Image (tube, rainbow, N blue to C red; front, side, top):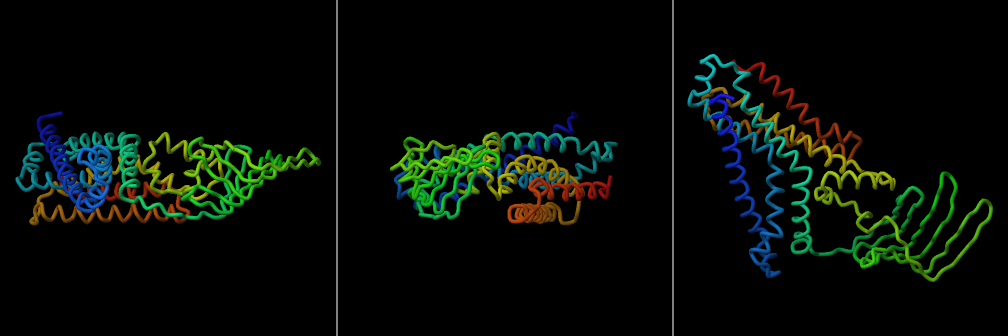
Length: 359
């Protein structure tokens, strides 16, 4: 690392953290104006709002735009250097363009590692704080949604069926619990209703009929009610696409394993979230590289033209990501491929720009 490398790296990190600080302040102000009525109606103190909401909201908004603001920060300070002929002086002194980009590589990798680590644990925990607050004080209108025709595998032997599940009072009608080993039915419990006891964390049935099968022998037993302790809760019945953002990566992996065991379908949105946490970190490196190449050349439009070009490229990147993940969640596109397609495309763009850049 030479003095020039340190000079570029300090400008890189300084510009980025300054930009992200400005973004955070603007985002918080806008969010306050949108939720001020909810804060007042619930008589929440400033300290409570900060410690129970904004401590989770700020990491969420920073992580959301982290790669794009790195891109804009790189373009901004690099175009300033190009306009002041600093880059021309560096290259004229005998430093190769490849060598000139070393500080950008170092800065991009440092920030990519920071984002990758934060995506695994810090950001999900922050989202947990944010979503809990919003569910209690902002989106606290509890609606009675009805889920129909639920078929789910509970464990290696047990399968559950519910005709209707009412989310508001956590009650289901037309309940069946079957134990199956291989192709053989061992027992079958049928009840007209079942409800969730949130205190004891168990399910309670109404009048139930239990059939036991042992070879050709059939034994039928009728009971007034019973308590079932299953590896199943009402949350497992809900396809909550927001909950995935509140799980740390180990928790998300365990949740995916449980859902696969239960035979749940439509899990691509979970895999997309899992792979996105690493892919977004690599996007930081790619966008840093593209920004440095674009802004290192002095043009007549100066920083304004570079920033406009950066915003356009950022918008294209977001569109690529949105389209590819939508095709995965709603279609048959592989989740791993969906989150990496924008990176592959922009990595190709970066290589093409590097070959054409004046050196």
